[in-house]
Length: 117
Image (tube, rainbow, N blue to C red; front, side, top):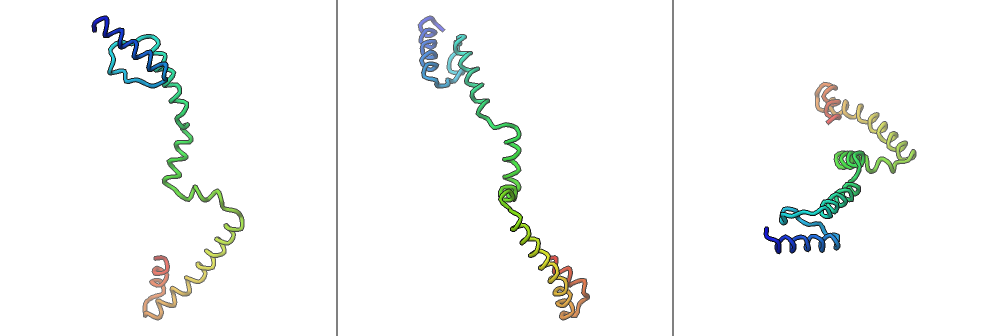
């Protein structure tokens, strides 16, 4: 680069640094010490804004296992009601499946298989 183009590039770099706007380094061939400091401070600012390793894993699992988002809101009464409902259905489905198998003229085990499906 000639002297005039170098001076123009240095002036543009300083203007952009004063406005706190990042620049594309590949566009300019000359770099100053001030420019290097601007990039290192901008990189440090970006690094502080990125989420921590643990937060990234939490976000990953929340996206894959949606139950993790609503399980925190459960209280003892809701869990107790869900357990009672599950036991009630479990107790009722066994004789019901066996009865339907008997009505169909099949062995009882097929009624239990059907209850699982």
